[in-house]
Length: 285
Ligand SMILES: CCCCC/C=C\C/C=C\CCC/C=C/C(=O)SCCNC(=O)CCNC(=O)[C@H](O)C(C)(C)COP(=O)(O)OP(=O)(O)OC[C@H]1O[C@@H](n2cnc3c(N)ncnc32)[C@H](O)[C@@H]1OP(=O)(O)O
Image (cartoon, rainbow, N blue to C red; front, side):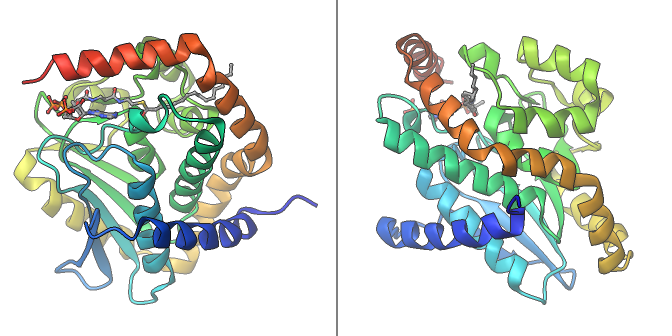
């Protein structure tokens, strides 16, 4: 029969640990702290300058999430950024530009791992989005149970892949559709919309918009409401609602990797990514 997500996860967790040893990083790209509320951890993303998803950062993130998942003292995680410039700029374009198919394969597998780890987490996940959040960066909020965005015009959020000449994979699209609906997703995805806070709230890609200095405290008070529900009942319900979406990725993982690798290896795609990266470097504040 079809292996379920838990099976996949076990196998992939081992790969992650092996990879972490290979990086042997001195920098701490993810910081986990206990919060003032019992059972709640705050996970801070700290891959300066913009929390782009390098392979090393993804690996560290997955390992930290895995530890929290297995630590019975924790029931919920607030995920936020410790980089002043961004919550997350998404996929690190240097990982998907000018590398070889083996690298693209490994990278995409790890990104899928992160998605599965988050989407099927038994813990309550709340994203405290205190900076811009683009494309792959939305993978964290979109797999969370609740999203709070800082009320600042710089805090744009959305799946802007088409603006880079690429397409969001189906497993980015599916949670978006589940959250904001089919028509709004069609619109947002095709145009690669990045929503400012008021519009983000209106379309429903975030649940709450608050002043930046209240993002963390609001996350804690929302967390308290979620933790008032018995874990077993909430977890069964979460799993019931999310399993059909998660199973699609579990079932189509390998094909999705093949599609990604052949798509990203095209010269035309490489060119448009390089142009986008060059434009980013020019438009510096
Ligand atoms: C037919 C078959 C189909 C099969 C389909 C299968 C798969 C689909 C194929 C591909 C899917 C790929 C999915 C990709 C998802 C992504 O996430 S792509 C990345 C999208 N991200 C963005 O567009 C955000 C870009 N960044 C920004 O807009 C800004 O940097 C900012 C986050 C708003 C912060 O702005 P600011 O404060 O002004 O800071 P800077 O712009 O100066 O940035 C600081 C440095 O960081 C570098 N940088 C920024 N983002 C990235 C990134 N994503 N990757 C790498 N590097 C990044 C930026 O260049 C600056 O560098 P320097 O200081 O100049 O060196």
